[in-house]
Image (cartoon, rainbow, N blue to C red):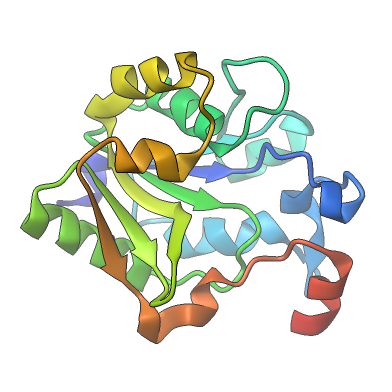
Length: 191
């Protein structure tokens, strides 16, 4: 697998209820927008970067091609994944959240290795205790499968993964990579 086979989508379309509705990807963390940490880590390692966002479109364009959910309202991360799969031209889609400033390039390497060796449809990170569903590598050929799943009214990433051939990749040695900033308390704790 090489970068020409890989598109990334950074999920930035949530409501941010625990941040009083502030757009999480644009919240400053050590003087930089949260999304910039993920963007900087994957730049040069993927063919292209998409940003799934439902507001502040002009600001997010600095970090990639902005796509909007193809469903109304805030339908969750699967809606962003679906929108990304509609436009991606590569064989694989790397899914990442905008609010995880400690992500490392090893994530891409291990997910790719597992995808190649296991031959599965989806590889998702596991921190040693639980699945981390917004850190995944997905075959783009699952586009229609995902649309069918969304049309049932289901919105959970985990449930969609379980309906496909999915392998959980061990990242217990990189647990801190999955720390996400969900509240002002988290901001204060990790700065």
